[in-house]
Amino acid sequence: MTALRDILITGLLLGGLFALVSVGLTLQYGVARVLNVAHGEFIMVGAFLTFWLLGSVSLNPLLSLAITGPAAFIVGFILHKTLFRRLMHSSPSLDIFEGRSMLASFGLLYVVQNLARIIWGSDVEGYTFLNSTITGAQIPLNRLVALAFVVVLGGAFYFFLARTRLGKAIRASAQSPSTAQLMGVEINNVLAICFGLGLALAAIAGSLLSTFFAIQTTMGLGYTVIAMVVVVMGGLGSITGAMIGGIILGLVSSTVTFFHPSLTMIAYYVIFIVLLLARPKGIMGK
Amino acid sequence: MLAINGLSASYGNVQVLWDVCLRVDEGEFVALVGANGAGKTTLLNAVSGVMKPVSGSITFMGHRVDGSSPNTIVNLGLSHIPESRQVFTDMSVRENLEMGAYPARAWKDRRATMKRVFGLFPRLEERAGQFARNLSGGEQQMLALGRGLMSLPKMCMIDEPSNGLAPRIVSEIFEILTSLHKEGITILLVEQNVRQTLAIADRAYVLENGHNALDGACCDLVESDHVRKAYLGH
Ligand SMILES: Nc1ncnc2c1ncn2[C@@H]1O[C@H](COP(=O)(O)OP(=O)(O)OP(=O)(O)O)[C@@H](O)[C@H]1O
Ligand SMILES: [Mg+2]
Image (cartoon, rainbow over all chains, first blue to last red; front, side):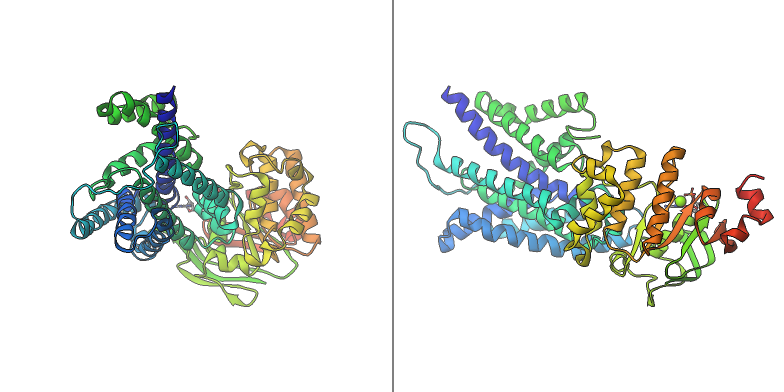
């Protein structure tokens, strides 16, 4: 029973984090058309910034979310307004832009990862946070707190997309950028905002992750791969699909890791292939 | 209200509009007709800023708008209701209408405007909570029209609203266009349904292979041999 409970809690926590990260990638790919290979690097940057802020100014890791998220947003917004927007205007078609922007994001991956390595080295790092267990149970408090944060942040983001004027403009732009433009949406701003929000979600997930996992400057790519698997599994461009897909993969991850940690990666691909055989266009694909 | 002069437009190296001129005065109901591929949609896209023209000028309410971004043009009060409806299929009917009210000046009045739109299209009110993808073709066209009205436009450009709809629904749509015009909205209607269009519009332009072919009052055009042969089938 307790094993089941632990698997469930860790699964939901990882699932929630995968969902945040994958929704971030969906905003970048589904709306802004940038298949951002460097996405996971911003998880790493979020994690290390939190680690560094704790060590240097003793900032509570949960409070550092309020810094890592907005900082990543600003970086993403500026990157889109300068680099990706220029690429978009110089590309003759959207397909060519997708190819070029992916190559550019490969460049970004190396720049970010190497800068991080210069600053933080390549050792495994970590810190202990809320390292107590709830009385009578084995669940570490830090995981429960992180889970609560993921649920609240995910809920808030969902509300933003579902109810606000900007959120609706983002969803409309995901379905048809040209029609959204006819409605008066300033598409270049919306695309830059989506790219920034994508990075912000990655950085926030990284900050939360550092409260219970060890971190390393090479950790990013693994998460990028997970996010890509989730985005395809959920149905390209579907935000709801990315949320559901993330939670499924998180539960798979905690279950398989509990029994046989070395099979986790394989389990991802098995689930991925089975789901795509059953629903070739993804969970929410049409 | 809208003046287009010497407009040329192309896709890559392929030119599709050649020196096209068109004028719509305030309060008029003007039609633009022509065969498939004549360049009607391209013309509307150039006016609404979705596509940048190669040369020529477009003036709306005294402002030069060629080369302006679509949001500037919607903000000036020109609404483009696109070909094949283009409703946001994964959003509810209500959300589609809200998107129509996206310009800041329309957003604050969106509830009142939506009431008016529901008055015009009662069926949209019945389906307000449904996803747009579950609407019939006729209902989607009504949604596209309603959405286009949500920005409180002074003028609407409407691209083939009758396309693919049953004759009964087409008549309904045309009646709604007539009543919008009576309410004071200036209309530029693109249609292939030439007979019905010439019956409700004031003036019409005929576009052939990207060139101005004919224009004039609708009552004169229906009598013209060329129009009768090429567009009315006798
Ligand atoms: N995106 C595009 N890329 C390349 N060529 C295009 C594109 N859109 C239209 N064309 C071409 O431009 C010409 C004019 O097309 P347009 O859509 O403006 O015609 P139309 O009068 O609206 O036709 P229809 O009545 O079929 O809607 C056609 O020859 C068409 O093939
Ligand atoms: Mg057309």
